[in-house]
Image 1 (cartoon, rainbow, N blue to C red):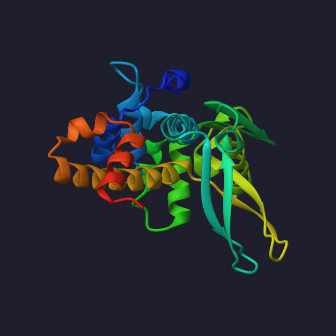
Image 2 (tube, one colour):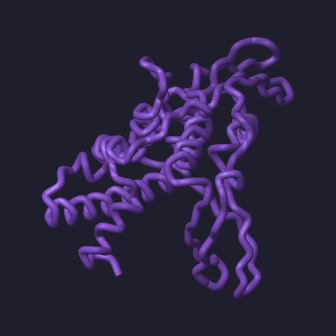
Length: 252
């Protein structure tokens, strides 16, 4: 696997930089948006190829970026699959932080030995146009499986039994656990318990998009009232902007 971003060195966004990153990422596809955000905060002149990071490594970087941007506390809603009760879930980044992924591995099952790597964003982009889930899964495995062998001799992937391929998929999920995090939830209404997945890429983007729309609304109001430039307004702290908006009667 290529070098990954040092999570401890992820830079903080200023309000202006955060808006710039949001604007650039908003023009991208959902798969490309996280990569654009990570590139914007990379401390290196030549950042690592984020599209070649495993999905879990990418999500670990996004989780660290979210923590540095909006803090460690997260809130989302989920519907109980048993009684449809809407629940508000509050948790922290530590609750959805998993072990560091391992890039390459080999699985042995009977006469078969399969070497493979973890799936990346490039892989997901390559299979996104497939007509159905089964075909996409097959193509993804074709990209990730490096060397299949039977009784020590190289063979084609078609020669590997389905149960061995299924074991490879399961092992990939275990190795890249950050890509498959979930919260344990218990409904207070009917006591049903289930696991709800947490997709940090879409979660962080939804938060960022809402923040950008709200911030641009504040800039518009202050610029219209005082004639200030956007750059000057964005250098203010969020608290100071709110104070001015309160004086204008914009905020209750």
